[in-house]
Length: 295
Image (cartoon, rainbow, N blue to C red):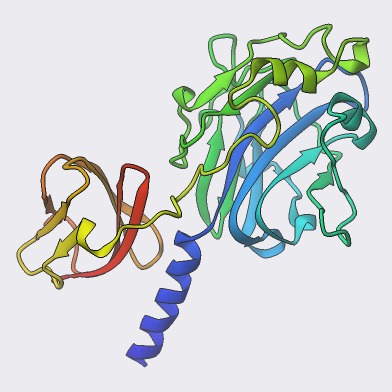
């Protein structure tokens, strides 16, 4: 029985560690009903939206649990950008260079339509297998003019590599409130795509990826972790790449119980209870996960 439970845990954690869904862009425009409102997500790995993902939105500072956007129609998606939009015709007019495929039977399927009414002061949150993995907007807080999620008629875009599952304004680029006014195709302008292409960086749709775990791993001489099991609350993490290491520790439920930047080779885990854990070490864009036992 113990061997079976251990195997099930490893299968569960592998799923947790190797996939994610990240909010990468929020678009709110000055088009009238049926509106141009869009959320861009990046799917890292393979995710079943029908069973694993909940997309919450925070209405006027309310509870995340009060409102959801149904994304189950995506089904199984692997390693691609996907879009939740209000109106296909208006969105295609604003982005003539992007194909929004709403037919789930097609290989390029990347878009679902929603009738859910969101506004430029609402927040968004992705829950993957019960864990909050991406968030736009401060919890239980109504947006105002001093916050970038007061994003009326604008675009907010996540900076590449900036994702830790929490809200942090410094993780986002912001075109500025009302910056799309008069520029949208629906109002006779050149369209949102032309505007975002002009801004460059992370703004154009589908720009970049890698908001989650790095796919580049360490070669054997580059990272050493010992001892294992850990008997005295100290684990040594040494690397030939750099002394600065980003270290995370996850319990058997996938919860992050330790998150720190290590400037030496010594990590103190004495505050963590005994048990089986997954240790994730990230250095210079590389990432490694290792099973450790703390006694």
